[in-house]
Length: 311
Image (tube, rainbow, N blue to C red; front, side, top):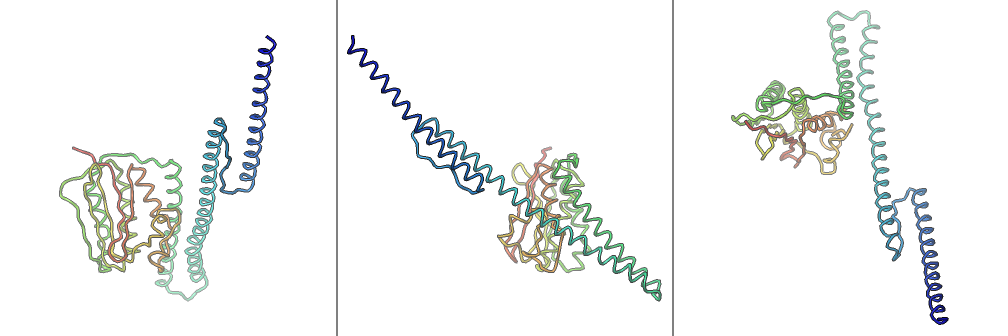
């Protein structure tokens, strides 16, 4: 009886000793984790928690903390990227507003100070003032439109749209410009009516932006085209040119706010960098997608796809 009792006591003492050692090991592991985590958070580094352990309860906790750290690091990276984009946007807004306003002030000063100016010259100056003022208003409207699109405040009702007619009408609107500049124009619109769920005003603006973009930035290729085709359950519209194209480095950035194409396509043209951003947001608001393909002096294609309606 005494021997059995002694054996039980020995086993219990062994269990207690093992538990004590295990708890000390776990406490030490948790302390190391805390120190690492404190260093990573305070230092803003991209490290992960590293701990060699057989503790099956600590391992999943370690995995989840590392996932949280990774998400936090991604969030910080996105915030930094957004902050840089906002600074660039403010700089571009300032430049794009300051330039035409400076020109307007110059014209007005000339009109006010030149008492010998003829009526014809005065009328010409005032016409230029009006043109520049309209440029400023258009830019301001673009900023408000983008803000509404990104906040979800802009209501875009969807209806059945005959896309063939929308495409024809928008290409015809540029007929005089294309003819005057000697563009070779290719239009590939099928006779079969193709219908999508869309919004006429939004589609007009999307096509206007894409065609204007092709003319402005791809004009050195002297060719422009518009194609409309079925693509499975989607209807795809392609607007293309044969200009110098867009470098691969820039292709993922052309739809970003305030990103301008002067570095990648045409250094003589300074745009606000909002047209393609608004275009992308409008396409997405219609439930579609937009893509870019570019091979310099062969073909640069902006294509967007919308869901097909079957009749």
